Amino acid sequence: MKGWLLAAAAALAVGTGLALGAVALGPTALWRGISGADPEAATILWSIRAPRVALAFLVGGGLGVAGAALQALVRNPLADPYLLGISGGAGLGAVTAIALGLAAAWALPAFAFAGGVAALVIVYRLALAAGRLDPRTLVLAGVVVGSFAGALTSAILVLSDAPRLRNAFLWLLGGFSAASWPAVLAFGAYAAPALAVLIVLGRRFDLLALGEEAAAHLGVDVDRARRTAYLASGLVAGAAVAVSGVVGFVGLVMPHAMRRVVGPLHGRLLPAVFVAGGAFLVLADVLARTVVRPVELPVGVVTALVGVPVFAVLLRREAA
Amino acid sequence: MILRAEGITAGYQAPVLRELTCAVEPGSLLAVVGPNGSGKTTLLRVLLGLLAPSGGTVTLAGRPVGDWSRRDIARAVGVVTQREEDPFPLRVDQAVLLGRYPYLGPLSPPRAADREAVVVAMARADVLHLRGRTTDRLSGGEAQRVRVARALAQTPALLLLDEPTASLDVRHEMELLELVRGLADQGLGALVITHHLNLAARYADRMLLLDAGRAAGHGPPTAVLSEEAVSRVFAWPVARTTWRDGSPQIVPLRPSER
Image 1: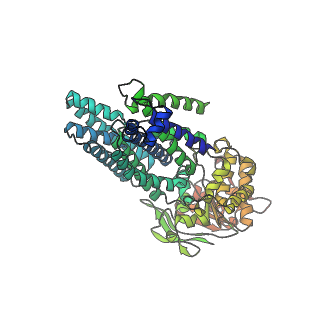
Image 2 (image 1 turned 120 degrees about the vertical axis):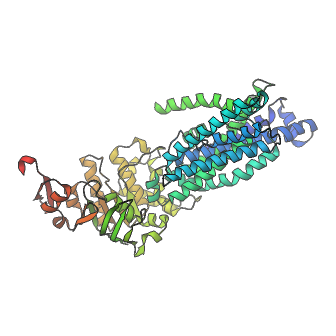
Image 3 (image 1 turned 120 degrees about the horizontal axis):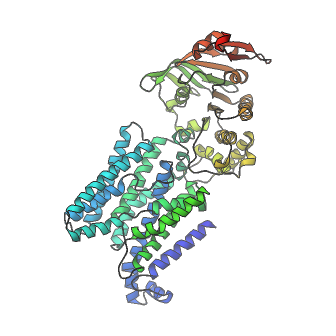
């Protein structure tokens, strides 16, 4: 029942995402575009809106799943997919590409991905230096590496000229204006296997959330499960930043919201978070490109503006 | 199925356990007692294969415990620890169902046999009436019984409990020990780590008194809990009396009573 409702909400979000934009398409026009009867509508739909909606959905869903997984791993509902320093590293990578004046379309996402994964590896190594993979050490390492990358990013930004500065700034805030089918494919290639791994690990997260001792006593190979899950969620988050910049709050808020809808067991939570996170980011992107037309807001601004109040309400209700 | 440690030496940097031998056997309750830091929890970790000993062997059903997968150990041995934190509270029946993890495939839903094991475990631990509640709405005693139910849902041959009554009042403590004793009488092998010498003396078949990682006594409670040994190990003078069931009872002495 809840599954159908979620699916219906997601379909509605996707429909809205396809219909609204610089030119609004009514139900008839939308159908004529989909069926190909109206070539102009078809072009808008298939080459502009569909890849954009698809990318927003996949990134939103991916960030949601990565967030839920990390929250279980560090046993803290306030964890976020960027916790591992990934956003800092990816931001540094992207700004480096912009500062070097690399104009090629592939350069920025590739640098961002490399930066994010490099940060992930450094954080992981630092956390392991303490011997075993301890969630608290990991969070600390993530914060430290993220801050360091942030400082370098600021330094590069200050030394860049104005147009580049604006570019970098916009990119850091996240958005889907550059969405294309190749970007959808690139994200899918990295994120799909990682997401599949996280979904298969699903039940193990229920046990890891109890703590490492309890999980081991119930039959989980804790070190292996943790290592796999950290790397898989890091890969998803890194790929997300590479194609869409740093979109905050989806990975933090969606798992929280869905736990209230389908409960905390990850076998149901992770698929629900994927669908809901995808729908949420599609709608956030619709707002981003329609609210102050023709200017486009960075989608990260929208998710924060919507996400923070929602989160505050959730927290208050939880406390009550 | 017997879980046996023979001549184990184990620790982290310095050895915590030295040449220790003990066994958890079906139908029998072994109580492990000793001062803080004497190696009780380390012994548990070594028995479970979570810490490899630097000397000696640990075997489960005759096979080195290190050769067992975590999953197979979890099918044979249930563990109840002192406490757990619960960042994402579950409904009690869902929490107990987690005990079926070692029997489930990664994506397969629980089968009828799993559901049945959960109900049986909840009934044995007397938490059936709590099944609709979430784990953050339980008292300390109820939460501990739910964890016992989760361990029983693993349908283990052996049950290891690490200070299971540490934060419980008298009634809940007695209820839990009665439950464990009853399980042992039905054939389960049990090991209980505890600070309560007198309760251990009444419930356990055998006791292991640890002193800085060595066995200061191992055998029936009457043999282990001598005035001399307990006074020395806990570094505090005690007297020994006998309760009506014949079990030795330890009374720590005030300075004026020495």
